[in-house]
Length: 607
Image (cartoon, rainbow, N blue to C red; front, top):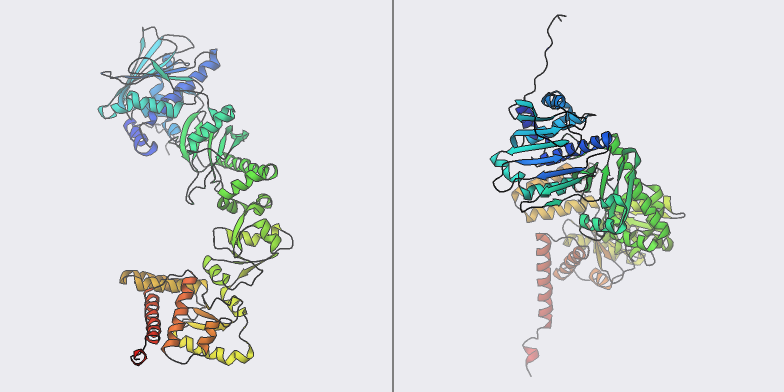
């Protein structure tokens, strides 16, 4: 390159920057007040460091026929040289401001606040007098990038006032109602006094101490009620010294919906950043809602969420540790409250203990699972049944539960995290054996009929399979003598069966979708001619034995088909159109035979 080539300064198109702010950076032009408040607070902080003065922001909204919005602060103010350099600073540091690179000087922060005001007006007037001395100065800027600077002879107080003349379409944003709402939303807990002039006279002070930082337990609970809409189950203090983050987590007194995300209210140096941060609490802590104030977490370009960086990760991790310590302390100090907490938030805790062994050793014994002998706490389950058997899915549990031997328990692992919890029990309790149940294997383990009944049972299997086309039939002996039959299928076969019923109930389009799903999900090791399902007949049941000795014919076929439908219903399986037709036809035939047998003949009625 030519060493003598001239260097040129990049020019900033102010209209383009404003368009970038309003369309792509900020979610709403309402944030202009937040930016002005932030500038004012920074100016007051600088004034306090300089001479100990300052501490008040006054906002005068539009009202009546007035055309000017004014925000005044008694902060450090600007010198004539600083005001003259203001627009140049905005241009020179705009990308630094927009993309939130570090800014150490008040003037750089002042620039981005001014740019945000151009989203609601075309003209900005700034009047300022510096605490360092000198005359007052007036800067007038326009959205086309032009500006003027001139000293003023007015006796201005130390500080800065910002005067906005809104565009007609933005007038409502600068009115008293909206400004009061925005000032309370963004500046409620600022460490300065923020007052809003009222149209009827007087002022409303919107600032107050932050209850989540002040330590009064009753004020904290009241804030929690406002945040979550109910009385918190408990309040957990949060402190992360590395990022100057403090706040509270409120334990919900109700179980949130499964898909609910955390909604953390975040303040940066007591200025509201967002009401809905979903990345500050760890994922497993969806039983809590939090509010925090931070001095070091980094906002995104819009200053409406947090940058996912190392600071956020460390803060998230330490907040998670605080919540976990609360659970551990509760287990040691107040078991009754812990039991109440667990009853509400079992799903969250089951998710948590999968990855946290220390917590699992305290909490797992308090969790409960569904079993064939009722709902049991894990502590009672392992005490009563050192050999624990569980079914992976709800369908498998329903099928096997009917044939569980007396004195044993089967755990339903089909609910969220319960199967994983069962697998962890041998790690957490001594002398506990856990076994996963396979439905088909469980049926095959059942005793076949006695040797002298074997021929009759085999004949019954053959005849029943012929009556139920496409259904395999087995005859076994199990202790539930009142149970004549059991419908069984492994999970994959059961899904295929349910798809078949849905296909027969739907139209051609839906049937084609299900066919493609079935082909895509078919396992290579399952033969295409494998039986779709199995009906297991209980040889210990009196009705089954009678059917085994019944002659060939419609009565036998009808009885087998009714046992098949009954087993589907008992297993909570949906009936497809073919199943319903089978049930209706079989019941009609059965009732027809019964009525024929019960109706007296003509000769029987003759004396």
